[in-house]
Image (cartoon, rainbow, N blue to C red; front, side, top):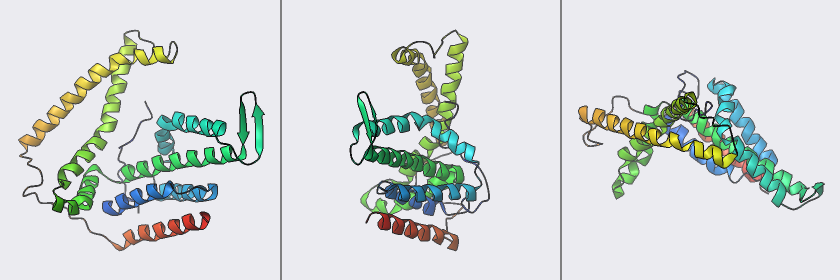
Length: 264
């Protein structure tokens, strides 16, 4: 829980911070889409190298990304073990009682693990380098063409931005409630997995009460400021594409070429 930092924004003046939020959102979406088509270890390794370079350019400490990966380590290990156990093909590498590991199983386990790492890393990089206000404006701008068919673009963008913003807040609240329960003598690490999960149930009720209270306070604050959605709303800061945003298009083309080369 201490390592859950999804939705955190780190102010900065790096090249990545200065990119247009619409360009970053579009790039992140297409990049995630491309990751699912990377079915070669070398292609996945190139994608991973690109993400590491992007993190360095963004001047975001690597330790934050390692911290962001903590909540999904269990999922990565579980999916890797399942592929090692169930995927057959190629030469047999190791044989244990009840399990036989093949070359294809190792390859698939590596690909799935890198894919999950890439998805979390690119999503974290987006939130680390883009403020919640910019995210809202970017999503609203990208969704604005859907207004012609009656889709409330502004409301959807605001809803997603608020949800993303409140993830770390709710997680921090969860940790406070958990520590309060521990101060009352509850040991969350004692017993088997089902018993430990049952001990976490008393956390849910105060967490839901706190979440609804925060939602009500936010709604009252928005009403007090005469918020009425997108009707008659203007923006003080206008978004503009610049030449530096073309680098994202060039990078997407290069990554697409890598994907095509290694798929044939």
